[in-house]
Length: 345
Image (cartoon, rainbow, N blue to C red; front, side, top):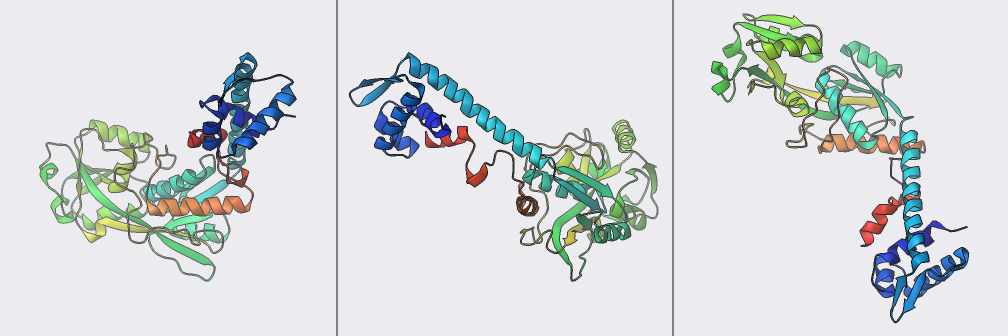
């Protein structure tokens, strides 16, 4: 039986001019490489090289062997990736959140570590979230405050900031920021399922009137065709992109900022996860905006924030404890075959 390392070395030799250069690039000694060639030729019962002074040149047998070796090694990589992906798809994570965007931040952090995992995000009231964590309906919950308990762990996810969204011709569009008092007039379009954000504007804008839309698709359609102002957040802008023909103006008040925390049972989450302390959960310029517009089922981009990386590390640790590894990660810490060859070039 032909061992894969022999095929890997054969492909490596074909890429370099001399045997000594190939041995150096493949991080083996020249005698070891010579023995590998001899062993492979014995197994195939055919010479693979024309031997010249200080170098080897592939003959027709060798060229054919290299072509098949590359295909076999590529199939090995494909096998490893496919099996790991199937393994990851068995990982199920349930998140309960009190507002839409924080649920996405946590969801994409988990998917960054386990891209094929099945992550379910549910938005509910705080009491239901805490009950769901206790009865194991949720593995993680997102709240607007810390939650203490002997069996709980809690980390800050970040702070989301509220903006008012207006047309470019609107007087507010020229401002760097506004207050609730300044915008406490007129009519605003609002998406109804805002969770913890739901009462912020009505409580601080008693003279304004709000038109609520039940479904996200209906809300976006109305906003796209209306001149009425609406609201968004810095997280929403970074995740989904700026609204077409709209200017987003920050609301410069304490009540227009909300800090979120991730809570899980001790020993099964967040332990040593290194989630961010006092920094936003989204990094500026982290990548192209998501294209999805649904409230709790999202397209996913890969962020660079410490909080997300911390959650991702934790999920990987928990998965590894159950024998589940990331796709393309080979047992023993090996890289995929093609990356190993490229790394030695």
